[in-house]
Length: 306
Image (cartoon, rainbow, N blue to C red; front, side):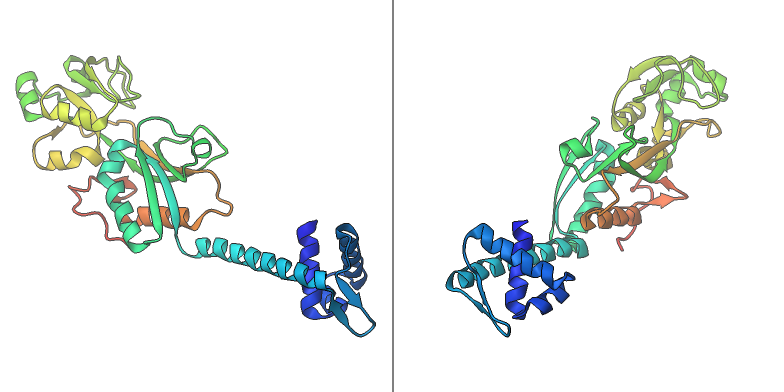
């Protein structure tokens, strides 16, 4: 109520007219006159001396006008600052992402983004825990699989297929499975969400000999490279090792679950420019082929930023 009255009073003074002020505010002249009268009554002072032809500020009215004018200027400056934030990315960008994605992709992409937009600062947490973007004040949460909270906005970034891999040394010592059924006699390295009893296959239920279970895909890859067993690894971390012969892909016709990564954020309405611009930038930079994310070393450098 006070801010509205201050705006009306300021417009009346600057227009030198109740009529012109009312037209500019889209109000009736009688409404403007009544609001000024109520303002004076509330303050217990006369702000304006009125005649049929002229308005003149009283001494206290002049002091009140100067304060109100400064408030209006500060308000306009605040609005301009907010609109400026929406016209060019700036401010603090808080991101949470899986560890491997952060190490392989996010660091370089975010660094390039910050080079192009120097008004951006960032805080990044690489973690395997579930992060609530609303509760924790995170702008973007990158996670594997769709979020359970339907009130959040989820933008699919890419898919990463999994491939059964083993080291040449393992295959020399344990033999190479030629059919899916032969996996039952092989040592299994299992990833998060894999069954502890079966190989991670979509079309078959083949019992596995679990020798290692871990919650980190890079750890699983290194164990496979060392000959511990066969692992169903995402292409984004094993393609280079396969191309270099350090891992051998097994049973390429076997279907393993596809991993999906999503960018999750609280709301699409009035989305901050920094969030929208970074997500578009990230999508443009990732080495994706037919919707599948490639390992950056195997694909060469990340796609040149826009």
